[in-house]
Length: 477
Image (tube, rainbow, N blue to C red; front, side, top):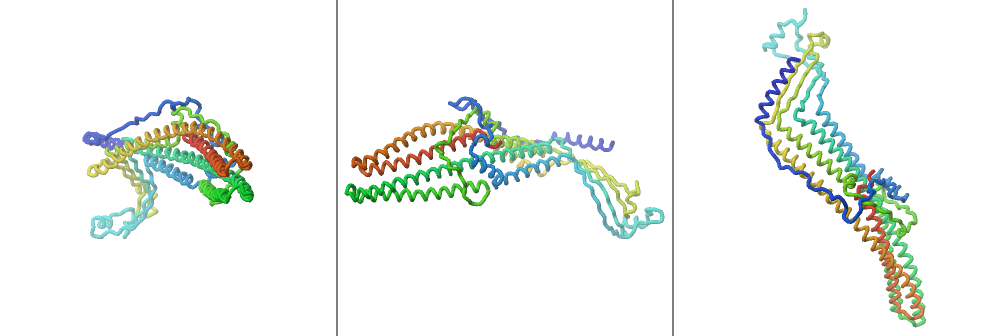
């Protein structure tokens, strides 16, 4: 114990002398300067729906089943899970570096020294035990414990461990953000598929109406009320919509396979209930206050954890400039024959040493690593600030989008009602020869386009609501 104390005292005295002459380069430092506004301009501070679990946010059982499949089978999510395991193991590696290392060793060997060497002459004349000399050649048997411990005076190892922990937490948040994105993407694609199915149903109905109108025009031609031009115009409109039907059917296949990819399976049809998208209710998504978004958005939390890791890692790298103490010890049994290994105390060996090491010629390499660590720290600050601004802008855009889409949907719905009524009126007038065939044709075309546009606006409303839920931090719990 006295030897240990003396060794440590001498090492610490050497420390003080070296530290005084040790100069660590200074770097530019920056702190976060971006703060979120206290509220969203023009919106009240109400409960944030980001706290709502996605199973409660969506009330469609088919969609919920698809999301469950995606969360189980999505390859991207499974890749992130393995990255999470890697980050977790990195924490264990850094933690192991912080504690002493003890290794058990066993060994054996044969040693032949020259007879005329000092060691050979000594072995030849020395009696190891009564009536026994050193064998020639001599064997060597060893059983020992090796101990080493780097004393973490400057907190280097501790900071490396803490940095690894924050990187692991960042990986957790990264996976949660991937879950949020996946839930939103599956939901958006699902409603896109519903919208396409609704649009193709509208198109098929319109084709039937136009086909009937074509037959009427043909009879009108036989009665000499219209010309061949009217017949061709109606035929062209039917062909146009039939062609458009195949385009939408292709879009349906693409959208179905996008869902199949997200849920990690090969292409197959997606079974949907016969849902009219226009009657789908839209519950209010409450924005809350920006500070709630800060708590719920996993990408912001990931950026914060990466920033913490970068700050701590810079401190750990800075400690590389300072001297470090490593204590080593070795205790065991050593003999030239196995039977003498347990002959105590003659077979006992031990040693203890303390090493004081600090960089001299390789300081430039450490400087480069140190400057890189601080550049990453500054980079993490900018990423964090960028994530705050981006998140706030996303919410503002989506809140305004919901408001404007609601107004647009209301007006488009009135347009559809007016054009639907106009279609009936134009058909009646045409039959009584009080309206031109072009008025009938154009009114039907405008009515179909308005109905398809109405479905599009409704889809945008639903997807904007989903994206707002995501932007507020919902979907990962």
